[in-house]
Length: 129
Image 1: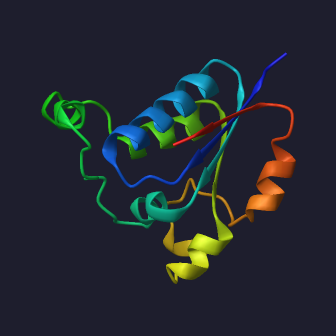
Image 2 (image 1 turned 180 degrees about the vertical axis):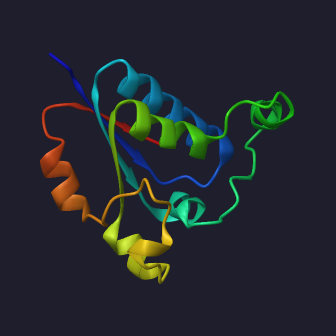
């Protein structure tokens, strides 16, 4: 039976965004049910046309760029397209940032409140970045 993997992403830094995306993509293509909740500083990168050039925390973030690792946005999109991943924007962050749901990347689902997200993912692993 597939395990639930739930990921809450709030960081706007390259390394946590990359790690969250790697867990989502590997989990999804491995047959796990993956749910991602994008909020706070992470959400701005998922507006259509937004850069995926998040600032690095340290040298590993710079190496991700110089060695041309797939971007976190690419990995999240692959998690949706190649596996059973669902990516939700935080309804509060959508409101705070004055985003419209149709202004987000096409693989991002309708906004969801944190209470509903936590209720839906009950019983699985929850990772936070």
